[in-house]
Length: 173
Image 1 (tube, rainbow, N blue to C red):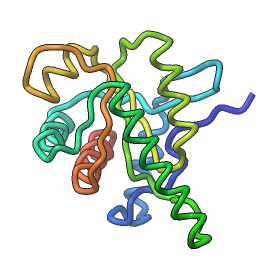
Image 2 (image 1 turned 120 degrees about the vertical axis):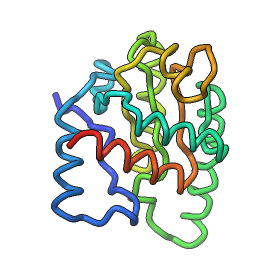
Image 3 (image 1 turned 90 degrees about the vertical axis):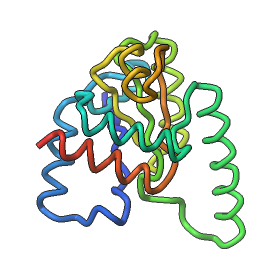
Image 4 (image 1 turned 45 degrees about the vertical axis):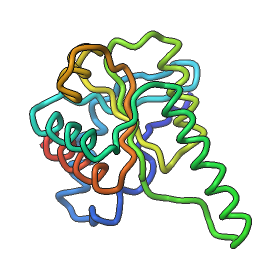
């Protein structure tokens, strides 16, 4: 059985392939969380620390943080349709870099993890995923500053993605 890690795409161009970045990515990938046994999907398990919290809050303020499975799925499907259409028009290859980040809490129902795994397979390698070692209440409170639950978030903006990825990679050193 071959397991698929959700970080198969290259990092955005703002993350050059230096030894330091490659080691940080390897460290990140060493802490795996099984998102889907059925689909053989793993994602890095990451501690929700202050730098990640701040990066998520900035993403929220920049309107680059999408919340909820339906909203995330709609956005990804619309983008995929556009990318597929563009690829047919100019015969270009599919994106090879991570441009979106799916964030899951550690207390999702198995059905939600399976749905997330399906989205990851459909949108790879441009979509990467992490599971934060925080329950949905803590994730919501720390990412939005408000009470509630957030089981699934998507970082969609380029600047926000770079900020969140930088916080994640730094936190795993």
